[in-house]
Length: 196
Image 1 (cartoon, rainbow, N blue to C red):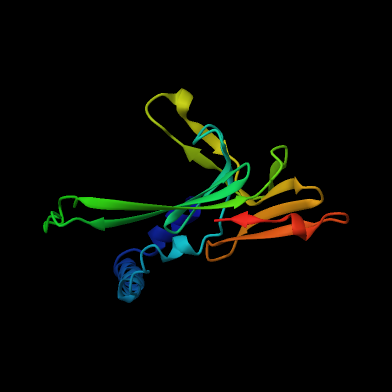
Image 2: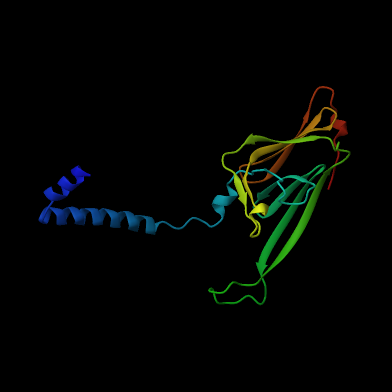
Protein backbone atom coordinates (compact mmCIF):
# COMPACT_ATOMS: atom_id res chain seq x y z
CA UNK A 1 0.00 0.00 0.00
CA UNK A 2 2.86 2.40 0.88
CA UNK A 3 4.67 1.51 -2.35
CA UNK A 4 1.55 2.31 -4.40
CA UNK A 5 1.17 5.69 -2.67
CA UNK A 6 4.83 6.51 -3.42
CA UNK A 7 4.37 5.57 -7.07
CA UNK A 8 1.37 7.88 -7.39
CA UNK A 9 3.32 10.78 -5.85
CA UNK A 10 6.19 10.21 -8.29
CA UNK A 11 3.84 10.08 -11.27
CA UNK A 12 2.42 13.53 -10.70
CA UNK A 13 1.38 16.12 -13.21
CA UNK A 14 2.00 15.39 -16.87
CA UNK A 15 3.51 11.96 -16.25
CA UNK A 16 0.37 10.87 -14.39
CA UNK A 17 -1.84 12.05 -17.25
CA UNK A 18 0.27 10.09 -19.79
CA UNK A 19 0.18 7.04 -17.54
CA UNK A 20 -3.63 7.32 -17.29
CA UNK A 21 -3.97 7.64 -21.06
CA UNK A 22 -1.86 4.53 -21.60
CA UNK A 23 -3.96 2.54 -19.11
CA UNK A 24 -7.23 3.77 -20.69
CA UNK A 25 -5.86 3.02 -24.17
CA UNK A 26 -4.86 -0.54 -23.22
CA UNK A 27 -8.23 -1.18 -21.54
CA UNK A 28 -10.07 0.26 -24.54
CA UNK A 29 -8.10 -1.96 -26.90
CA UNK A 30 -8.88 -5.03 -24.80
CA UNK A 31 -12.59 -4.17 -24.70
CA UNK A 32 -12.87 -3.59 -28.45
CA UNK A 33 -11.04 -6.84 -29.15
CA UNK A 34 -13.55 -8.75 -26.97
CA UNK A 35 -16.49 -6.87 -28.51
CA UNK A 36 -15.33 -7.86 -32.02
CA UNK A 37 -15.58 -11.58 -31.18
CA UNK A 38 -18.86 -13.19 -32.11
CA UNK A 39 -20.80 -14.44 -29.08
CA UNK A 40 -20.62 -18.19 -28.51
CA UNK A 41 -23.49 -20.22 -29.88
CA UNK A 42 -26.14 -20.48 -27.16
CA UNK A 43 -26.48 -23.91 -25.65
CA UNK A 44 -23.44 -25.32 -27.40
CA UNK A 45 -21.37 -25.43 -24.20
CA UNK A 46 -24.11 -27.33 -22.38
CA UNK A 47 -24.19 -30.09 -25.00
CA UNK A 48 -20.48 -30.65 -24.50
CA UNK A 49 -20.88 -31.44 -20.82
CA UNK A 50 -20.46 -35.08 -19.91
CA UNK A 51 -23.56 -36.96 -18.85
CA UNK A 52 -23.87 -37.08 -15.06
CA UNK A 53 -26.06 -39.48 -13.10
CA UNK A 54 -27.69 -38.47 -9.82
CA UNK A 55 -29.22 -40.84 -7.28
CA UNK A 56 -32.93 -40.30 -6.74
CA UNK A 57 -33.05 -38.60 -3.36
CA UNK A 58 -36.82 -38.15 -3.35
CA UNK A 59 -36.68 -36.00 -6.48
CA UNK A 60 -38.88 -38.17 -8.70
CA UNK A 61 -40.91 -41.38 -8.63
CA UNK A 62 -39.67 -43.91 -6.07
CA UNK A 63 -39.13 -46.56 -8.77
CA UNK A 64 -36.31 -44.41 -10.20
CA UNK A 65 -32.87 -45.28 -8.83
CA UNK A 66 -30.77 -42.77 -10.81
CA UNK A 67 -31.57 -40.06 -13.34
CA UNK A 68 -29.68 -37.87 -15.77
CA UNK A 69 -30.38 -35.00 -18.11
CA UNK A 70 -29.05 -34.69 -21.63
CA UNK A 71 -29.72 -32.28 -24.49
CA UNK A 72 -33.49 -32.46 -24.98
CA UNK A 73 -34.18 -35.42 -22.71
CA UNK A 74 -34.26 -36.77 -19.18
CA UNK A 75 -33.20 -40.35 -18.48
CA UNK A 76 -34.65 -42.36 -15.61
CA UNK A 77 -32.99 -45.62 -14.56
CA UNK A 78 -35.47 -47.88 -12.78
CA UNK A 79 -34.93 -51.40 -11.45
CA UNK A 80 -35.29 -53.01 -14.88
CA UNK A 81 -35.43 -50.20 -17.46
CA UNK A 82 -33.88 -47.08 -18.92
CA UNK A 83 -36.71 -44.63 -19.62
CA UNK A 84 -36.07 -41.64 -21.88
CA UNK A 85 -38.42 -38.68 -21.74
CA UNK A 86 -37.84 -36.45 -24.76
CA UNK A 87 -39.31 -32.94 -24.61
CA UNK A 88 -39.69 -30.58 -27.53
CA UNK A 89 -40.94 -27.07 -26.98
CA UNK A 90 -42.00 -24.73 -29.77
CA UNK A 91 -43.84 -21.40 -30.06
CA UNK A 92 -47.59 -21.65 -30.52
CA UNK A 93 -49.57 -19.84 -33.22
CA UNK A 94 -50.60 -17.29 -30.58
CA UNK A 95 -46.98 -16.38 -29.86
CA UNK A 96 -46.51 -12.65 -29.46
CA UNK A 97 -44.23 -10.61 -31.67
CA UNK A 98 -43.13 -8.39 -28.78
CA UNK A 99 -39.79 -9.59 -27.40
CA UNK A 100 -40.52 -8.06 -23.98
CA UNK A 101 -43.30 -10.61 -23.39
CA UNK A 102 -42.84 -14.31 -22.97
CA UNK A 103 -44.23 -16.20 -25.89
CA UNK A 104 -46.63 -19.08 -25.35
CA UNK A 105 -45.05 -22.44 -26.04
CA UNK A 106 -46.46 -25.87 -26.65
CA UNK A 107 -44.63 -28.87 -25.34
CA UNK A 108 -44.54 -32.33 -26.86
CA UNK A 109 -43.25 -35.28 -24.88
CA UNK A 110 -42.22 -38.68 -26.21
CA UNK A 111 -41.20 -41.59 -24.00
CA UNK A 112 -38.95 -44.49 -25.01
CA UNK A 113 -38.46 -47.37 -22.61
CA UNK A 114 -35.68 -49.95 -22.89
CA UNK A 115 -36.55 -52.83 -20.57
CA UNK A 116 -34.07 -55.44 -19.41
CA UNK A 117 -36.19 -58.60 -19.65
CA UNK A 118 -36.11 -60.94 -16.64
CA UNK A 119 -33.72 -58.64 -14.76
CA UNK A 120 -33.30 -59.62 -11.12
CA UNK A 121 -35.00 -57.10 -8.82
CA UNK A 122 -32.24 -57.59 -6.23
CA UNK A 123 -29.57 -56.27 -8.64
CA UNK A 124 -27.43 -53.79 -6.73
CA UNK A 125 -27.36 -50.33 -8.30
CA UNK A 126 -24.36 -48.09 -7.60
CA UNK A 127 -22.96 -44.87 -8.96
CA UNK A 128 -19.35 -45.15 -10.13
CA UNK A 129 -16.66 -42.53 -10.73
CA UNK A 130 -17.76 -39.65 -8.55
CA UNK A 131 -17.72 -36.38 -10.50
CA UNK A 132 -16.58 -33.05 -9.07
CA UNK A 133 -19.36 -30.80 -7.85
CA UNK A 134 -22.82 -31.56 -6.58
CA UNK A 135 -26.38 -30.72 -7.61
CA UNK A 136 -28.89 -28.71 -5.62
CA UNK A 137 -32.64 -28.99 -6.14
CA UNK A 138 -34.88 -26.34 -4.57
CA UNK A 139 -38.47 -27.51 -4.89
CA UNK A 140 -41.10 -25.19 -3.50
CA UNK A 141 -40.77 -22.86 -0.54
CA UNK A 142 -40.37 -25.52 2.16
CA UNK A 143 -36.69 -26.24 2.89
CA UNK A 144 -37.67 -29.77 3.95
CA UNK A 145 -38.28 -30.54 0.25
CA UNK A 146 -34.94 -29.15 -0.90
CA UNK A 147 -32.12 -31.53 -1.80
CA UNK A 148 -28.63 -30.07 -1.65
CA UNK A 149 -25.21 -31.60 -2.15
CA UNK A 150 -26.54 -34.46 -4.34
CA UNK A 151 -23.58 -36.47 -5.67
CA UNK A 152 -23.08 -36.90 -9.41
CA UNK A 153 -21.50 -39.94 -11.05
CA UNK A 154 -19.98 -40.64 -14.45
CA UNK A 155 -21.62 -44.09 -14.68
CA UNK A 156 -24.13 -46.39 -12.99
CA UNK A 157 -23.67 -50.14 -12.56
CA UNK A 158 -26.47 -52.65 -12.09
CA UNK A 159 -24.60 -55.63 -10.62
CA UNK A 160 -26.18 -59.04 -11.13
CA UNK A 161 -29.11 -58.28 -13.44
CA UNK A 162 -28.64 -61.93 -14.41
CA UNK A 163 -26.21 -64.39 -12.79
CA UNK A 164 -22.74 -63.20 -13.82
CA UNK A 165 -24.08 -60.27 -15.88
CA UNK A 166 -23.88 -56.55 -15.02
CA UNK A 167 -25.01 -53.58 -17.07
CA UNK A 168 -23.04 -50.35 -17.01
CA UNK A 169 -24.69 -47.10 -18.14
CA UNK A 170 -22.47 -44.13 -19.00
CA UNK A 171 -22.45 -41.06 -21.20
CA UNK A 172 -20.38 -39.93 -24.13
CA UNK A 173 -18.71 -36.51 -24.31
CA UNK A 174 -21.63 -35.44 -26.56
CA UNK A 175 -24.12 -36.17 -23.77
CA UNK A 176 -25.45 -39.41 -25.27
CA UNK A 177 -26.18 -42.55 -23.29
CA UNK A 178 -24.24 -45.75 -23.89
CA UNK A 179 -24.39 -49.03 -22.04
CA UNK A 180 -22.25 -52.14 -21.81
CA UNK A 181 -23.11 -55.61 -20.61
CA UNK A 182 -20.24 -56.96 -18.50
CA UNK A 183 -20.19 -60.74 -18.51
CA UNK A 184 -18.22 -62.42 -15.75
CA UNK A 185 -16.95 -66.00 -15.84
CA UNK A 186 -20.00 -68.26 -15.58
CA UNK A 187 -22.34 -65.59 -16.97
CA UNK A 188 -24.09 -66.06 -20.30
CA UNK A 189 -24.84 -63.45 -22.98
CA UNK A 190 -27.87 -65.60 -23.87
CA UNK A 191 -29.56 -64.30 -20.69
CA UNK A 192 -29.56 -60.73 -22.06
CA UNK A 193 -32.76 -59.63 -23.73
CA UNK A 194 -34.11 -56.13 -24.30
CA UNK A 195 -37.56 -54.85 -25.16
CA UNK A 196 -38.29 -51.37 -26.53
